[in-house]
Length: 359
Image (tube, rainbow, N blue to C red):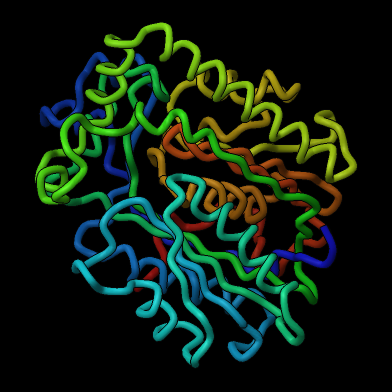
């Protein structure tokens, strides 16, 4: 991959709400907590996802060394509700960051949203003359009545009963320079698995599904109960496809799994999930992000950039180190990237970033 750099990173991660308090208050199942290893979930309160994205984006822009006029494209990724129906959050983010008349787009690719957006931005930057940089943002706030962050996947084997945190993240991608270089990116789909995440009943009219509480656990366990052989086959096909994609991306980058200093992945509270992702690739699970992830909850589209920001800021990776980003979104999409750190940015102080940026 030619001339694609990470010029600036930004994030907005609220203070985590302790898992033991959620258990004591009856919000979080005690057995799920004991089984999973989660210690907390970042909870944003009443700030919207697009507002968080603006904070992360302006931080990334300030760190990037790029003028706002250099930005040729904005892409915003998300999973959850962004604001009023019929409103365009990506144009709100554009208005409050770089402004101007550049294209602004929204991507819905599950938890792969930011990685997919980076790949799309690269294509846009190489598709016309004079396109220097792009801004990619991602944000979600799951503090809504129809979503229970502590129980949305209760009792499933997905991340050992995953919990969800709120966050925003941003990256300025540059064709000119940066502190890290994107050496390879790839993506893939497994459309035959979409039925595992599809709720029972009609897909239209939308109100019939929108008004129901989000029940990921019920969908997955219900599918596995009705179609046990298909569920087992789906799990294997997802693992195989994710491993193949990661190995292909590593090879495209001209390195081997032994050269990967650290790997970002979907945040998990348990070691088992990280082993299931990294060991088939040939990467020791200790090179994953267990401790950071289990303290924040699964941050949907922001897991990877929050993790990379943490690794760079705390000097856990530095010049010459390669980071593998490997992700899957709702069982139907996959994304992978290899990034090489080539310089230590001025904002990398050697200490982890504060969990919450000032408003």
